[in-house]
Length: 269
Length: 205
Image (tube, rainbow over all chains, first blue to last red):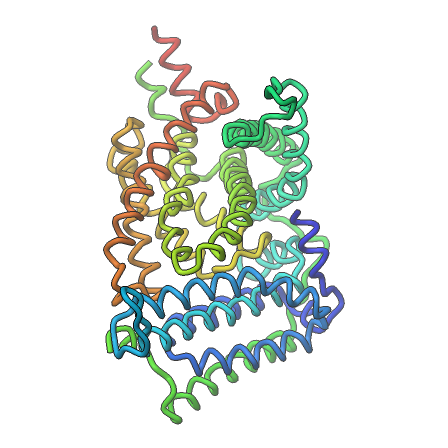
């Protein structure tokens, strides 16, 4: 599952993959935060095109992987677009019985859907170019994340990778002992999944406790710690951060000058 | 055995065991949500505009981690930390569609879910506390999501709020109590604060 999705998207060795994970995460966060205050469709559309071109050039992801990565974001965005187009009062564009489409609905809906795409393309670039273990190591080194939290999350990450197999084992173990239905097939309903999910929870809690004990018995949590593989943080990372912020600020400013940019008031106009 | 009802809270820093437990809860629920969301995305495409509304029916299930974590570990901030860790796993390792703004939503949810338990000084774990926890967790995060997703000014705003709150109460509150009670019965959490409370009571009898 996780292993499968990430391996389909990896862009290791690319330009973006060599950048510092903490800086990338911080940029992803800043851009997402800035997007929350934009409510017109033009600004996020421009940002999306710029981001798509940059991510494509810096990760060299295959088109198929890029398209597959877009599926959840497009679906999510489409739902947002439709509900806004249909449920927002304003200047009526088209009406049929209880269904009506307004200009404001189309504009705000389009903006929110495109915002999903902007955050989506950045998330695709981030996940494809960032190794989870390197990210945690970098957060520990550069963002002062405590060593116990770091290693607890890394232990959890390892567990997550094994989870699809664990899930399969539990389902098979249940299947072996299950009472067959009259037509000879295995029970599949919601209660079977509920039992498997609970078993997964119990097994994982037990495994987590063993993991914590073994980490502690190896002296984890003692300070000062040294790190074996240092994650680099150099001037190129700062250059990337400055460039991204400058481009974001530039597009927002230009959009404001040209009169496209709309803020939160767009919801009530 | 009245002393055993005030567990490890006096310790200054978090033990690795408790931290790993919070991460494990985040991972398990993150994985189950992930499985669930796959099915959900397909369903919400089929439902068209109703798909966006239908998310509120399940809104409460995102709150589950916090009350479960608080009930097992019984320490301040357990709920907030568990929610944030769960969101980190969802965004960083599973690539959630919401993006990193989920960290903020998770922190708000965690705070909402934690307030009722904090008000009882982490001593009461009855149905009412869980119900209130689910209600507050869902209520607080609703206004944040409404701001982020531009729900204000929509015709269906109050419908959204009501479905959201009911979902929080049932899935994010009462269901958490059912899960915690069943988990305690299996004995896997006996080495945590919840087990010390439970076994302490049994010994006193």
